[in-house]
Length: 300
Image 1 (cartoon, rainbow, N blue to C red):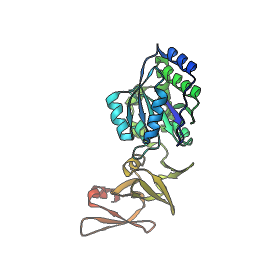
Image 2 (image 1 turned 180 degrees about the vertical axis):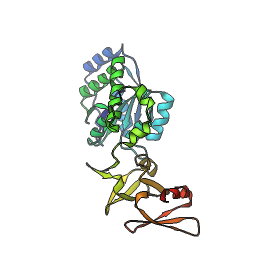
Image 3 (image 1 turned 90 degrees about the horizontal axis):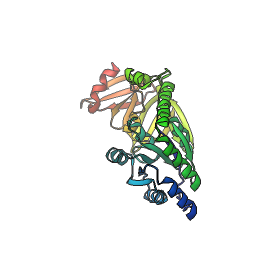
Image 4 (image 1 turned 135 degrees about the horizontal axis):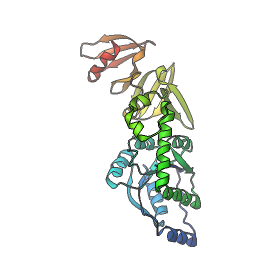
């Protein structure tokens, strides 16, 4: 598995390679396996521009385009591409969240696209081996694609599987030496050993907040207001996506727009319509709706 990060600016610069060099690259690629390629970006101009740049490359065949993460997952399942150019920052599911939902054994090669080079750090955390900045140097782009081609070899595939095991070991704090060993273990137990922190990004800055210090979270559309130790943090993410990042032993959803720290609930008061009002240690009151009445056992 190779995951590579490619960084793009808001303005797409289209530059054709010199005719002679382009011809050489075509000749060089004639004997190479054709890579079925999917482009995922919420900006139509960026999709068209990238498709235009990939068109002269003989062993790249663009088989589809997706406007968001959900379309990407659908097309990856349907088209089984070898290579996916994947935008990181998209409404709904981000590029990283798309990768999290892919099967490791059948995952295509991922080239991340982003307007912010801060995401390169996160890309490396999911085993990215390289990234380039836009406007992309033509030689640099082909250098990255050469790495993609090399990754298809059996030797490189084994190396990247080893990187996955290394990542799991680092997250869990336990040495996992083989996929057989990983299958024998309770993966959820391993993941739960990861430090319970929530990464909140604001421009070029990332703040890590201990989940145990979060009191409650309110939703406002695709934005979440995270309340922690008297400070309000704003993050762009859907409630459903955020829930996947939270430790369910600490933070639980109690309303369509509210998540609460169950460790900080001081009082519980029933209402005539079947709802409940919870009072937190800070004195703040939140509503537990009837839909989430099954969560009552967590407070007793």
